Length: 228
Image (tube, rainbow, N blue to C red; front, side, top):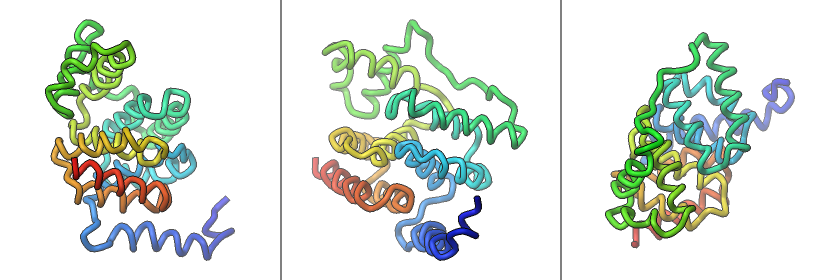
């Protein structure tokens, strides 16, 4: 059902706010690929399947590549879990097939089962600092974090480490209840060159899709990270 027909007043104001007021706010703009990457990650983080289905074609039309889309979806596994990520993978494959995008896409994997831990630790250290080279030794969950989250996903090509930190920020921001991790990844973003001004623009562009409470919480986390 077309909500433009069933709910014309609502859609008029939402389209104006999301596509014009927020997207064009002076000092809060992002270039289209970055903006849509952030929005797609935020939609996955908030489990917004219908909105993701609606926005993915626009993201592709505005320059987000199929590889970049898939990398966003794959990395979401570590932040929302396989059970919540899977519907978005199916939606992505559906839309790709309708557009004639051949699947599977070209592989982006750079690690093996033998070196994923080592390379994952290297990625963690590059983002968060040298102390991460020992963090994986403090328990099996931290070892999994290094080998699986960073070794299996962050080491893949298709997105830079700065882009991966940005989408992680969006997954966490949109979920809510992850403020300690959100603050840590805000700092990780800053270490990768995604400064507080950039992160504020990311929040601004995602706000129409995740609402004010989680956006305001994210701004607080950015400020805390900047003070550290």
